Image (cartoon, rainbow, N blue to C red; front, side):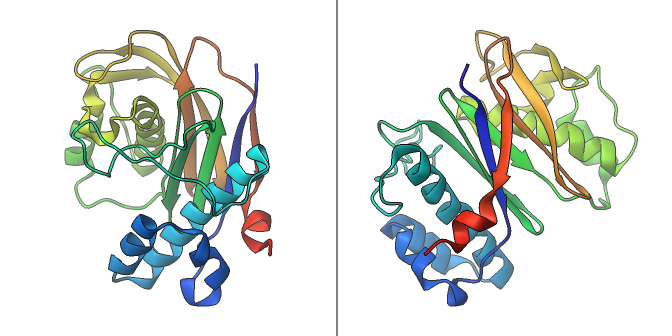
Length: 222
């Protein structure tokens, strides 16, 4: 079984990296320009440039040559990104981290920054199934990363209810309701940085080996 490769890096200010901005397509540049906060622009650029550089390594093609299809089920360009003829990939960013997972089969990646939530009970009620409970921010964000990674795998993201998934640790005990896959799924917990839980997920009964790599090195390449 081919491994799932995950690259982790940090945000990059577009003003400091015109070569990375040049990798983006027109859709990505327009989206980059709409962010008002500098931190959001830096995370967006790093994640999308990293995805292109990671795919370039695997396909031996120039990083700016990929035509990315983002067609959603509704027909608009805000769905899960895909590159025809390339492996599946998933992007994520939070705090001071951006990540890209690449795998031969559908894959989802999520990272979150642990922080206090003013209404943890209310948010947990949205995320937890009736059989689940969380006792604090650490447990909540670990559960959230597992579930969002799973939802990204299906391509539906948070349009499907998290509460339809019941977890037993990192194992999916059940998944019901809209968007539930027909077959088994896997989840692997990751810890790329302190206070930043992460998870990668995919379709199938057995998880592949997960290889984590230095995304900053890819972003620094000239």
